[in-house]
Image 1: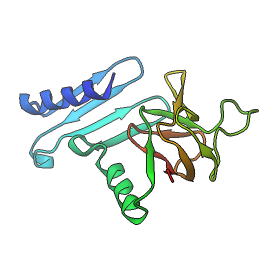
Image 2: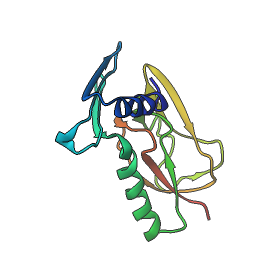
Image 3: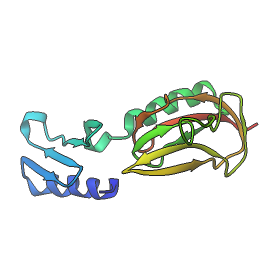
Image 4: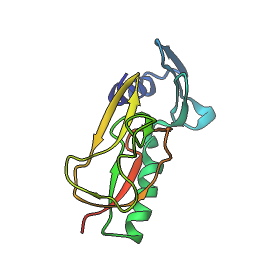
Length: 156
């Protein structure tokens, strides 16, 4: 199930006036609750076998964006590379191989920065900018969310 589908489902449930809707699929469970006990806000809970997330639906990505904005104000010339998908972040292609990038690595457009595993598929995340890796924001083998900052890159 994609993020757009989940957002559409949340909007539909909110407009319908239902107080709670549960949806269970093979590896995803979603519970959407609305009502006066939380003053009209929608609660979104998604549970996967190895990770669970809970956040208010309208602001699901807001905390991540605020953190990136704060760092951007402090260091205005840095570009934030964000996760395009939900999954598990890996800094190297396999346990016996070297890291794709380290702090200080010079990267070019199209260079592989990391791999994100989603549903047993390993997706190479390529750089859309050229520059130097200033900071790696996620630990190896950690779960990541959609649009979560992964790297800070100095384009100069």
